[in-house]
Image 1 (tube, rainbow, N blue to C red):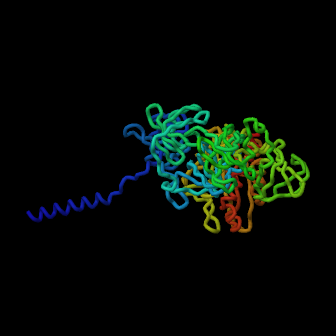
Image 2 (image 1 turned 90 degrees about the vertical axis):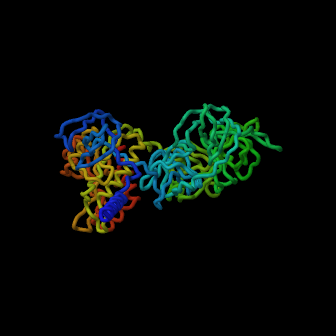
Image 3 (image 1 turned 120 degrees about the vertical axis):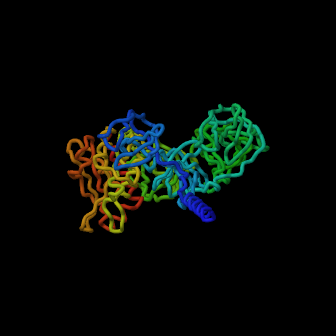
Length: 581
């Protein structure tokens, strides 16, 4: 009897220990497939020869349960499963928070540069839509190796990753203050959100001068009562009291910039304490060295550049002041200062990045600036930043967005998965270089309104025929395959662009190759005929790029740098614009 009891106890302990050793289910969501085509066939097995068991709609999301070659098995309704071609879906990863450079989660970024430019897309060729001031925080959206997309003051845009830091969640939180008070909306239309963040869902809106009851304040957000529920509005657009005219000689002013930063002191070195929208009225308390000390939005006070305040109440004109106190800062070394407001005018001198000049006047897209002594010159508005305002001048003819918008482009990062491609002298894998470079191009094209697709979005093996199938199914206006070369002779270097059809592909190869040469300055190995599957079997305009030799140790170091890959992306971007133009 004792032996039986002992045996039962031992068996029970073994079962418990096995249960404890069993892996726990992952907390993160499984990888999901988003259907990219309407009426897509789901098959009983991983291949076109298998029978169709269902049809699904574009945009539907299914969990991936297995993968074989170029096919995903997905979970349908109930216990049913089926197979779908990987090139007809996009992958949706688990919803993890973004990572900082140190590996911790973050949903905020902080600017480390004065007047950091926010652009409409990830690249210096995109239009400046505003500024992200030093010390300010913004919501993180996404990033690539060189650029970060943020949400700042209700608008999305891209900033250079080298001028921001990621904050841990606890750093971006501030203690909330409570105590009910009243306020008034000063914006034309103000969004009410379900959380204190510009990325939160909008639950309604308030019109100008609407009264609100503020129940709590957190960071720069007010919690208010809204239609029987609680909502959040940004404090910059709520006045918590009427503007009282201070004792003494004061003047009333009106903001002339689209968005004007308010600083703690009368200097660009002062921290940004708020911002005011165009046409907002302020009380001028004091003027000093081209700066106004103002009172705005109730009892808030701060300093603003006098160049962007027009005096009202009969004490001056109403917005047409001469911007004599405005300054411009040079953005790049070797910037031309010319005799007149045109690129064909003679060059008076060259200025370096960081140099500042006082603005005498603005003529079209050019600034007339004060040089040494009593001389003056002209500088193009698209190569400088202007203090005090967030807008900028776009280079004439430089906006290529219109040529790329709605064009369908398929980008093919060569190799992947078990196929690593060429291996560099320092161990660099071609498959990693093609993926990172193609992703940079993808982001630029997407920001320009192109309908852009990747043949692979992760380190997975995709057959050559599947890559061509993606081009055919998407009816691509252009197909570009990314590669890096290798050869036994380690002294060989340079870039080559291959095409198969002289009539179909060469018109695409020529402008892309020319722009790549202009941007990268690599040795030009020309455009050549190439008998490669992804361009030979492709019915759409298609080219294959060999973007440098990883077998050359010096060139390997160059092509693996984020700077070089950014230049390649810029070259492809401009080349496609020229082709579609």
